[in-house]
Length: 120
Length: 110
Image 1 (cartoon, rainbow over the protein chains, first blue to last red):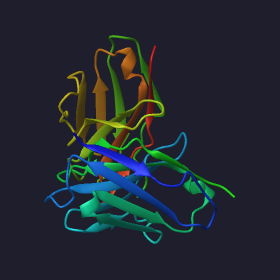
Image 2 (cartoon, helix red, strand yellow):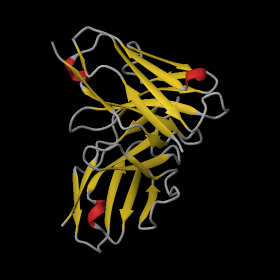
Image 3 (cartoon, rainbow over the protein chains, first blue to last red):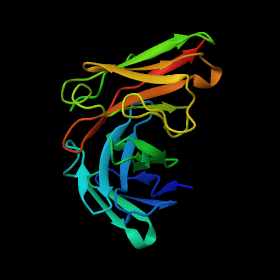
C-alpha cells in the first residue's frame, strides 16, 4: 500500500525559506524507475508542478521557480525534502507530495497535502 | 509554459454524458500522448482518472474515457453520477521533463 504524507510549517513569513518533508511508504526511491514530485495548489486555483526527483537522483524543476527550489531525498528514511526560498504571500498554497509514473509523468498516488500560508 | 486551457465549468444531469476539453499546443498536448486527467473533490487530493490519453487506472469506472485530437484532449464522463461532481484537471508532458496542468473545470451534476 502506497502512502505519502507531507509535513512542515503551516505558517511562514515573507522572505523566509520553506522546508517541506514528504515521508512515504509502500515503495522505495532506490528502485529503478521511481520518482516523486511536489505539486502545489493555491486556494481556489489550479495545480502547479514544482519539482521532481528520480531514483537515480536526477532532479527537475519548474522553469519559473527553479531559482528558488531545491529537492533532495533520503532513501534510508523514505523521505523527499523540498525547500523554497524567499517565500511570498502568492506562494500560499496546499503543497502536495506525489508519486510519479515514470512512463508518462502522471501522478498515481498523492499525499493529503499541507496548507502553507505566507503572512507576516 | 502557459497552463492548458479548460472551460471553467460544465454540467449535466444524472445519467447524461459530459465532455471536458483541454487545449494546449504542439509542444505539449499535441506533441505527446502523455495527457492525464484528475478528479478532485473539495478539500481532497486529486485522483488519477485517465493517463496516456485513453488509459484508465485499475478501479476507475469505465464511465470515464479520454481522447485526443490535435492539440486538444477530452475527458468524457458517461452515466453521470452525483459523486462525479468535482473539479477536473488535465495535465500534459511538455518536454524537457516539464509537466503542465490545466486551469480546472468544475463539473456540476444537476
